Image 1 (cartoon, helix red, strand yellow):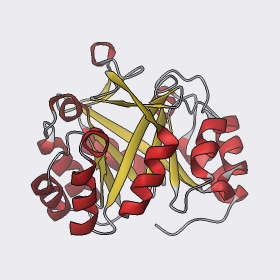
Image 2 (spheres, helix red, strand yellow):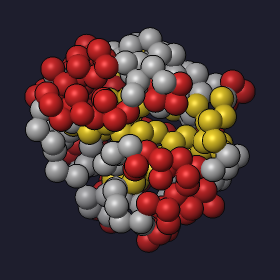
Image 3 (cartoon, rainbow, N blue to C red):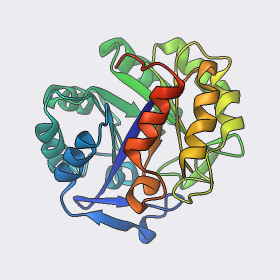
Image 4 (cartoon, rainbow, N blue to C red):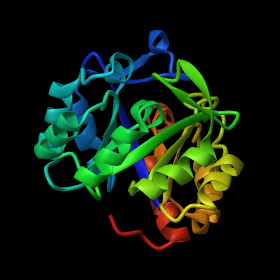
Length: 250
């Protein structure tokens, strides 16, 4: 199982939010590229970037920082990016600068035809981010809760050809309250594409519990606040994951 450090970008800085609240952002670094290099040095095999300003604005807002991160890590690890990706031109530009996977969230729910087009145009490079609370999908930077069931949408998007589903329990994200294992397994079990867990991961016990259900289709876990505040040691978490399950191909 891959343990994937999150680098959330707001106004060019590396921050973390609690439950998606921009006003409550905690700044962890003024140099996101250096932070990316730090996680590589700790053994990260993939990085997860989010353009938070972009997610709210509906268009890229931290492209300078994103380019700096990609330049800093080079070809060493894949980089996946979400936030404000709403058209094919943006996807093409990001892939051209070295992003490995783009993550489509709000646009996938609001304009499913766009997601279908993206999967056709860029096969192997498109993931979907499904953020949910109580089983219902949220959009627009988590500010609006829809009536869509997360499992129903995931099955539909699998048919479009997405590479993976990134599932975030927004009730737990940034709260250090433990990952929602049950909901993640419920989503992953009927799918044939992998699920990446996100939201609430706190410590090695959470990682151990996730590894126990890896066979249900959970290929990785994104972690943010826990590794920045020290409740989870990243290197120890990846070592534990390797010990409990064989490494997956990148």
